Image 1 (tube, rainbow over the protein chains, first blue to last red):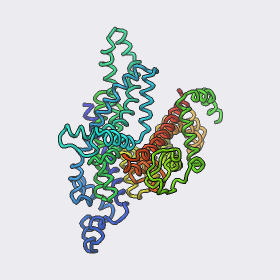
Image 2: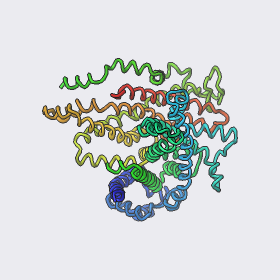
Image 3: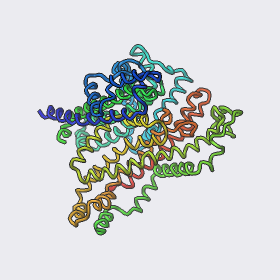
Image 4: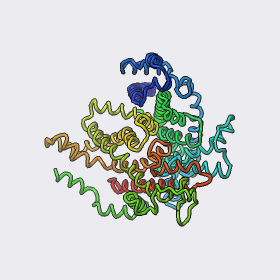
Length: 313
Length: 288
């Protein structure tokens, strides 16, 4: 079957990419200033202790051997111990990952809710004032840095008006929705601007397509045309765009988590960097790369299963 | 050879009418105006700023906006308006310095791998895949972590990651251009590879790269100020919009103007670059 072949080919292409990803992360961390052994044991450690740590981590081995150790350990799920948290890096990451995942999904849902209806309004009023207003607002939104939007929302809606909590992270699902609302809106404002722009032109393109004109000529009601033809086609391009902008979405999440003190992997990354926690930096960078490539893969498969033309290239 | 380029130039409408069309668009005009004013402030902040940006006045701490201090004063009594204006030098510099080296490296590498293909192109393809597998900001802050915080290291980090995007664009465009007759004509006439690549392919292939550059300058300001805010870019007491917003963060409920004003400068400048970018895209794209 063509699709299984396609999946296999796609997976095979990921192997050299991931070897390069591992090389980049390995080199980055080797170039971090300071002696990792000192970072782990502290300034007051004896030379013998430092030597023991270097031996244990394989820091005395040649670079190639070290790289091989890094790859084999990673494949076995061993990313070392965090200097900051004093626990295995995988534990720290898996503890924080659900929060970031929750925030990201929440933000995606919100941005669809914001962008979807507005894109329809803009597309159906193409060239008239509602279109102009919507496009201008989103253009300004795209020029706003994420941390600034977050700070404004935090100041006025949380600190001043007390509509939302200033920090913290709920225990139940409902409490989480409430606590993470402002952070999600912050991320969503940026993504919704991208989605709106794309969705608007996708809708306009479909509206102008011959099959939609034909459906209209047949006398199909507008509601049916929009639901059956326009929405479905616009959805494919939106999901693809969302999948491809996952990197930007995660960058936005990283900044937002810092602004709102949300305990996710993005904020953890900054904590790790300021603490020079090199096993944690290494593990987190790898986690981000794995997440992005999984989303890229899913996007590809989604697209190729809905649009047979994609399988050819 | 000049004949061939002359013909391709004639095929598109004369530049003058296109420029006139672009100038009639309000977005492009507003964008050009914003960038013009911003550049002026960036080049001569001392002329426009009422006070020294680092002048400390403990008798005028955290004053709200007034005639004497239109944007108020900060926790050390420094004049906020002067600090925001002086920050134009740093933040406008970001738009150039964080992008120009990535542009040059990307254009050269992209043109070369697009022209020669082969093993170099295959390796390039894998490298692009690997780099776009990292979220942009994650890779940039990881590189800044290696090099240490600061403006220069931030430029190096953004360049190390950013050139790939230019190279990818340039490569695709060069490959597309090579399908044209003028490229084959150059080969038939026995021109050297470098002459074909840099004198003939490059000028024809660079348009989308220039359009992308404009958008990238807006992104560079956003990224640079974000890194400043996170403590990884410009370092205090330097006046930089991200740093100013971070400084004001601790007094956000009592002295909101400290963080609000630099943010408006970011939004305006970013908007200016993206409006000019959109206008240029219309101006330079053959189908216009």
